[in-house]
Every structure is written in C-alpha cells, then in structure tokens.
Amino acid sequence: MNNWQTILTFIQELTKQVGARLLADFEEARVAINKDDGSLVTSSDRWADEYIKLSLEKEFPEYGVLTEESTQILPDREWAWVVDPLDGTTNFARGIPIWAISLGLLHHGTPVFGYVAVPPLHQNIYGWADENGSAAFLNDREIHLADIAPDPDALSNYFFSACSRSLAKMGRAEFPFKMRMMGAATYNILTVAIGSTIGAVEATPKIWDIAAAWAIIKAIGAIWIPLEDSQNIFPLEMGKDYGQRNFPCLIVSHRELLPMAKEIIEPFFH
Image 1 (cartoon, rainbow, N blue to C red):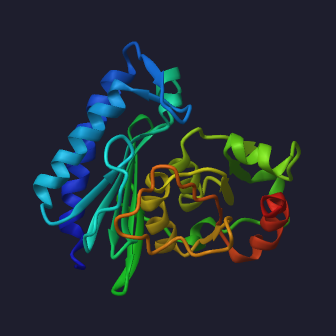
Image 2: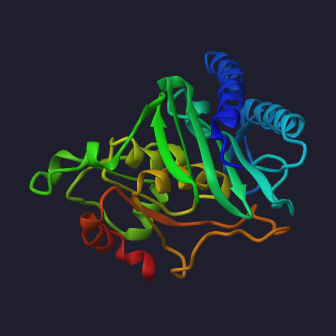
C-alpha cells in the first residue's frame, strides 16, 4: 500500500469526530480513576477507545487493532493499527490543554504511517515513511528539518523536553536548555518534529505512545535512539502482549546535537 491519501482522509475525519466529543468533555467536570499501573483513566478515554476501535474495524476489516484501553496484544496481521485514544489523560483530567489522539499504522510490525491530533491546540501532525518515500506535515503544511535547524551557539534559547520520570532517572536538576514538560508522551516526542524543541526524552512510553510518532520522526529524518539495551524497537512481535512494555527513547532533531544529548541522558545506561 502506498496510497496514503485514502487512509489520511478517513483518519482526519475520524479524529475530527473524536476530537469534537473530547473537547466537549474537556469543558465539563472530569472524573478520573486510577488504573492498576497508577495512571489515570476517564470515561472519555474509554469512549474514545471503543469508538476509534470500532470505526477502524469497520473501515479496515482486514487490519488488526491494538489500543491502550482494550486490546494490548498485537494481532497477527500484516497491517495493524496502534491507538492511544487520549494521550495525556492527567492533563485532560486536570484541565491542562495538552492532550492528543494518536493512531499509528504498522506493516509487518513496523510503523509506516502516523497521525496525531491535538484538538486543544488545533494541531494535526502526521506523516508516512516506507520503501516508496516519506513526508510529514503539520496542519497540511509539509515540515522539513532544514526549516528548524538550531543555532549551535545559542542553545540557551532552545527547548529540550522531558517527562517527569526522565528527570528522576537522569538525576538532573539543571540543563543548558529551558525545560518543558508536556505531560503527553506522543506530543512530547513530536515537539521535535514541529520545531518546538531540539530534543526530547521519554522514560516509560508504551507502544501506543510511540507508534505514530516514530513514523513521523522517521519521515522528517530526525534521530530516534532507543534507551533500552540499545535494541531496535521494530518490528514488533505478533501475538505479544505490549501492555506492560516500556520503550524509553531519546529524540534529537539534528545529528550534530546527538553527542550533547547523549551526555545529558547518560544515567539511563546505568
């Protein structure tokens, strides 16, 4: 498959529908409960999970679907969707407008297409990368690394983004950047793609946090470094339960920044 426009049109409409409902929920009182892993979940997460899953199964009956809130075993299918129906639930539940809807499409266990909608910020970030080519977009405008090249002599004016667990694992309190914590793993990673940050680190993302983002980061040519055993993340294993598996990672916009970024996150390797 290389006709991404057909898939894109469907996913744009699907995330528009889901985003409209989530935005309405976001304006109302939000009740969150703790899951077994300590993270929060709301009725909005579960509604979005079911709605997206059923919509994908109807439109793409031959594809498998893995989602955060329901099916966490990767189906044994050539093509499979990986869905985070509401990335940034804690932000959503606490009234912070940084949360996203994330859909990644795997081919033989490797992401080739990703779409991340961020309704509160009116941002849609998407892209594809396969043997036929690659491209990435922000609100239908193509994005390129050349457009976001940082000035190496003025890094104090650039951002580096980390999750709270990353700071604890690195044992750091001071950085040569102004720190930003997004509270949404997918969006945290994609700040590199859209030029908001020059790097990002995530300590405990799950597969639904990274599948869509991985395809987009690959499409623009940024650097993705797995921080667990230096192993390649993809392809995933068919039939495996990914509910508890973390994929710590470092993302850097330009290769010349990699040595400095690796020095910063060096405690990950101990």
